[in-house]
Amino acid sequence: RDTANEEVYNRGFAVNTLFPLNNVGVVTSRDGLVIDSDKEVLLSRIKHFADPTKSDGEVRTFFFGEKGRGSYLAGDNRDWKMADAKATIASIDHSQYVKPISYRPFDTRYIYYHSAMIDFGREKVMRHFIEGDNVGIVVGRQCVSDWRYVFVTNKICEFNLTGTAGRFGSGYVFPLYLYDAQDGKSRRPNLDMEIVGQIAEKIGLQFEEEKSGNIEAFCPMDLLDYIYGILHSPSYREQFKEFLKVDFPRIPYPTDANEFRRVAEIGGELRRVHLMEASLPLVTEFNIKGTPIVEAIKVTDGNDDSLCKVGINDKQYFDNVPRVAWEFYIGGYQPAQKWLKDRKGMKLEWDDVIHYQRIISALCKTNELMIKLDD
Image (cartoon, rainbow, N blue to C red):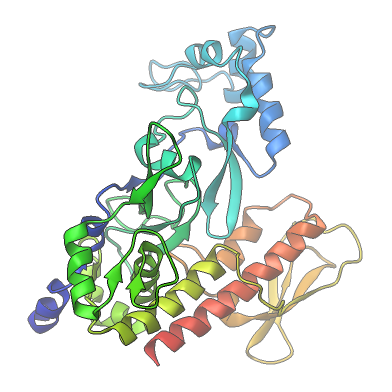
């Protein structure tokens, strides 16, 4: 172990200490039933599941088959019984429980978010993404490879959003704000104020709970952006790689206001890119003739060594795909590849084609901003 690096690393603050309320993402144990990319398809499936005119046996066979596991009926486990769940949701308005969920990087889907239908809803954390505008970082606690287990979300998220980082699972969710349980409107930062005070002292700026425009102050979002920038710095990941494999990341305190603002500015841009809030030019093309069904993904050479063609069937392909985007990792996934693989056998609508092109642009921009952080 590099003890000199360890001493420097340990001077920073741990993300799980700065954000006191945190937990891993949602675990449904039955994604195929309660999660879908199409909201109406999901609602139709839940209505079918809860239909009181259908017997428990009919519903069980339709959704789970006939073969159970061990002493459990098909679909059941120690904590979940299909018949009980079906009875619980039989007479409720299903639409109010359908929520968007960050399922994988750049892949938002819908979840039937009812406690009777999922095993671990992490409600104490996730409600703060439902009750009001929020943002949170998702960070791996340990990793078994190069450290890259960080992403951002503005909605509830699934356990494997960034892929498996190590024996402690995928990633922990750290919401920036906590909403009052009584009125559901007022909010406060999910921050350890002692650490915030130390940062304020080091950079010579006042802390404010909501951004006012005061140039002599910083707000919770500025702090999140600073952390997000640090965690995307290639030199940070390399210098402290052996310590990042052990526990939650520790973040170096900024030395002055200029450094804090420079890193936060780039971190903020990364956040907007990853939330698909940034307007980026499309760098890829798609020959739209025919029906775009994802059948077999095939990668061939492009116009030069830096580009490739990504075919989705025998005739159709995305052209001018930068290889840096095609091979780019976020957590345990290569999003440009995973997004297409998860849609094998599906027809891409025009909005899907545009969304995939935006993913490629976002990955290119991420690479560019990471280089800028080290520069």
